Length: 534
Image (cartoon, rainbow, N blue to C red; front, top):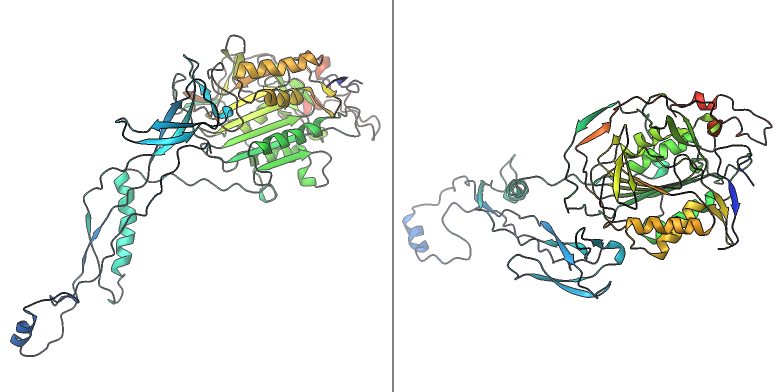
């Protein structure tokens, strides 16, 4: 059956078939810090024989009160913090996951570590030779301790003064920081639970660019994953409307299971699933909840964190009044209360992409109509040649964001039924392609998705867009690893030329046919024009 009169709705079809165990961490011994003790002023020390003590006592006519104790000089040993270095390990031909390798960890060849080859999903390939490799972190050999620092201690028992032991410990920590030349980096911010996250007012960034630190694309450096993972999953069936779908909630549930298998925690600090059959209003995919959930996804993220965003539902297009979009349209997603307004790709970029810090990863899957540039990512790749094409008016960011979209901007995405359950064609093909080959390069992975779609009779062509250029032929797709550093010298929105807005009356963007059957013929005339800024 069709989309119920909504030209942008996904058509219904029926289908008859169908961390890395690196080097063993070296035990870190706590550095010995001597405690300064007050020294007796009389020259006598308990437990030490002094042959002249008796003679000295006889020469003294009478005992006198000892003079006040002098401050003691304490020698403080500077604590050397443990530092780590990254070593790239090439995998010899014929060896595979689980086998052991002896890796030389210093230039002189005197230090070595026994490591286990990780799962193939964590392998990468050399861009020139194609030989697989993986990275490990090993502790560096500590440098010689600097010259001891002499500080002034104070006698125990003096009023208003601290003990010598306290002086030693406080100076030790400060001097340790000085000896490294830099203070330790800020600790990661704790993720907030969805129930306790309040959100904040939305403010779209202004047009303009600014320079930021970046690495050249040819750099072989990558960002080590921190192990922290977060996911936002949205599935909307629009039950009770003429534009109802069948498989979007199933898509969210299936994607949740896949992510949990790859180490994404299911608790509300790390995963939020908004579906329109939820009995908890905080987990309904309303416009307000989706907007707040996008903010929640990026709350507290820092370098090395891995994020995932999945949307399965209706998508549409509205005229772009800003003149930024090359086709004259803003792509949109429709919340369950779409009468309150659509959510544009501009709003999604501002919430999900622009705030991403350098060294963070966001993987997105959008299974909806007109989703080709659903996040306004600036680079679109020709998967056959590996060449990237930049948008006319690009929107650049520092984070590593990748979008797998169900179809091109001008195409619709199918809602299908297989022999097991209903679901979006893109989501089902994405999951099946990953299960077939979890260590595929991006061209192999995209080809597998397209192959699964084509076998089931769908003509939609999935798209890959990104915030950073990278070598698609050597990079292996992974949910949790392979974070690209920032390669963009400037970030922000750039307007090179003004594009005339498309006509609002064009049939594929007419929203008046998307009606609530329960409420009769409630026409939504002018909805597309009312919420252009989504």
